[in-house]
Image (tube, rainbow, N blue to C red; front, side, top):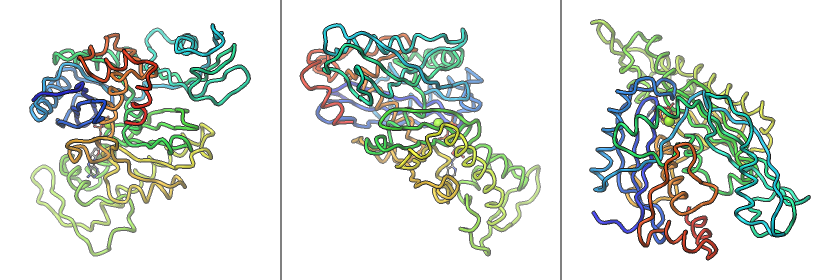
Length: 424
Ligand SMILES: Nc1ncnc2c1ncn2[C@@H]1O[C@H](COP(=O)(O)OP(=O)(O)OP(=O)(O)O)[C@@H](O)[C@H]1O
Ligand SMILES: [Mg+2]
């Protein structure tokens, strides 16, 4: 298949499955989804690679099926990373404005200053996420380039991760013959896929409930104000069902998906389910209400911890757009309703938006991270200065002739970046 633009691939390595999303990024058509590969993965524990061989096998299968569907060869990927080792903290930086007007170079210098804080020897900085800039005494500035002044300041959110966990992700991808263009925080990618600019502006929380972890990311005044990871997810619900109904894990997962409900009161009293037995025991019938009675306390616990985390940041009142749920576990019936009750905010389920092509392949909250990684990669190849590749220490793919990236190189001041912002 011949392509005009840049091929960008997001590789979401999750606790339960690996998902590869292939897209073509083009200045005229934006992001066109070409193919997806989703295969189960048993190589991770709570978002962290615990078995390299199993993870490599799943990545290989996911990449193979994505490239067969897309009809392109995959060489470079943007990988997601999650897990409780990820931490975020505030920092700031100050720089003199050399020529009386803020340039991109001044912004780079002030961001460099903000990241110059001591980090533990076994950790590395994943992202430096600007919250707001100040020029002299004026604060709350989103993009200071072109403004007049003598002193530029920035407040950032620094995201750090355990170096070994980052390196293991890179190692797994490299063992599959892939080059890692960058490693991106998973909830940052999910937010990229599902949030509108309006939501970011008035304040919003993204809560991604996967198999092993629940990730939180808060946007306030258009900038990322907080991110954290809770080591509980959909697999805990499955374990509760397996133990409560004395059924194998695979059957518990199937029952959860087909008949599970987060809110017991949404289930009619006379509904019945069939529960397969373990160790040769015959299947038996039980009320569906019993299943939801097992699920409900675990879901309540997850949302109660989410609420506590948000309250602890002191930003709860600033989340006027409420909460957007992503991740496979939010497909459970009754999740948004229950979340709304416990969090006391408007809640919606986030589907990937701003994409073209075979969008039905990625239509679901479980694809948010994979699509978000593609969107992040699209911003890098299109020259977004805030999306400079970091941890992987590998240069992004060379722009092809006539590609958006090459156009960005050639026309840094020609309004090209305005197109990128409008397109994504
Ligand atoms: N239809 C469904 N109903 C209920 N739960 C579901 C459904 N589909 C998937 N899940 C659950 O969602 C979880 C997987 O979600 P997801 O694919 O987002 O996780 P992951 O990315 O592999 O994990 P993590 O992000 O925690 O590393 C599993 O616990 C799975 O049982
Ligand atoms: Mg995930």
